[in-house]
Image (cartoon, rainbow, N blue to C red; front, top):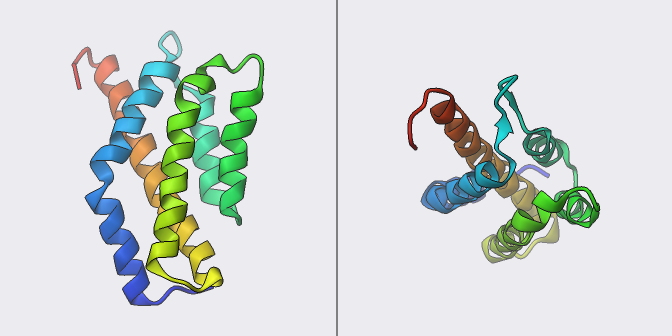
Length: 138
């Protein structure tokens, strides 16, 4: 489904207007997952979230990824950020319904919203990594 320019503008405006709150989740991800300081490697969990969000063909795949990570015994960290992540994804789902009543458009809107959201989350996480590596406070 190809979104018309009015819908794309609505999504982009929403992402810009909510960038600060999306970034706050990126701060939470940094606080929980940090990074491997010895090897300067970022958390694979962050990259996995970004990968699934950017490659998903269904929005539910993103939600399912988060739930799956939360349910793994060894992924205690996801239990700390999972609920807030799922809450934000629900807000994106609700926003897509507010923007358009057509289910096909809603699906495309949800994915576009999610990709904008994850870019903000991951960018803030990476910024915090860089600040930490430079010994600065963000």
